[in-house]
Length: 302
Length: 278
Image: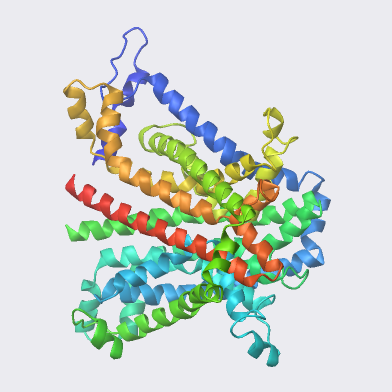
């Protein structure tokens, strides 16, 4: 209600200039309004829009040919493949975890729930560098399983499994965090009704719960994927930076940049920036759906 | 069976509790708890003197000062402008508003390395913005600040925005009726309502900035004692195979992060209570 009322009294701007319209007492003078809009846009331009535009301009600075050469070069291709692989493994894993955690947390009342919620939030407050470090301590040569892994001729750190592990760590809250509030708001009535009517556990999940949360689920997956493909700090610690083997796209950008191949670095960066923009677009679309679903829940509750 | 018998507070007709919670606990333990405990156990291989020596050398202390100082300054700037951006997005209408609203989340979606090289290019001496500034930004501590402003930008906007949307306009009308001018209404009526959200946003931006690595290392120049952040120091120690030293610094950062998490949760609980009271 309140939000629809706010936009109503903006009519005075359209009134003839001769009759000086009186400004409603709950609105700021026009100069304040314009000033604040200007300030906000200037701040966002300086810190957001200019960096975004720069990525694309710098990528094409030396021409379209240089741009595409940078992308199809062997090391770049292997970095793209590794990034897709790491995201391809960690996103489904975190999806399954997110659904399981949300089912337990939202549909049941159990001791230690808040502790589990805090643990799920933990990766957000741990520096990505530390996320990488802890896996080095466990799987590195001097780590807990270091000797055992060496004896069995397996490598986790400075190899692909370490990169996947680090990626899983930094991205594991995303799906759970989107699902839990929605599923908590939806409650258990529909599932209980299905149960009483004789549905099995999996039937309840596929036919009742999943359709109710599908947009939030997709939203979580989108955010999870964006972070998985763009993670730098954690992956940087465990990767070992072996060109063509353990370099993801963000790490490849770093190497190119440090070698002063700026156009190539920005070319690879533009792919990730494009992914970021697609993520924002999808996020915007899905967010509207989630809001609608949340409103549905609210309406039903009343 | 074991989980449902010991942990469930109320019996439920719904199935799947054991499977779901069991899997979630296993996953969290294997991926987070056990590796994290490795960090704490590793520091126990040091005695107290060694721990202090590893975490309080001048170079490490200089990195704490930079990391905390720049994070604090960036979070403060983001709090001020985050409030303005949230206000403008909620209260005013202007062309391109939807686009601006969607782009506010860019720092969440843009990989930090991409942001890092872009900011470095812009704020370098011959960059788009850098060339107009009378002082150097890229490769100085100021560059660290710029990168941290970028990555912390959405937090305040996104915590304040929903609260501002829910502010009951009748309060403002009542204040105006009672003779308050617009500034008084804002500072005495609106601001106290959004304050908890503002604090939460500040704490989130601050916490994120403390651990940030990817966007900072490109623009910082990484000079020891001058523009070297604490996460980078951890990596430097790791590259010198000083695992215990790296872990000691990491534990200092972890404890700080946990304390901040505690503050954030307390703030949010306080905010919920206040909101409930309104």
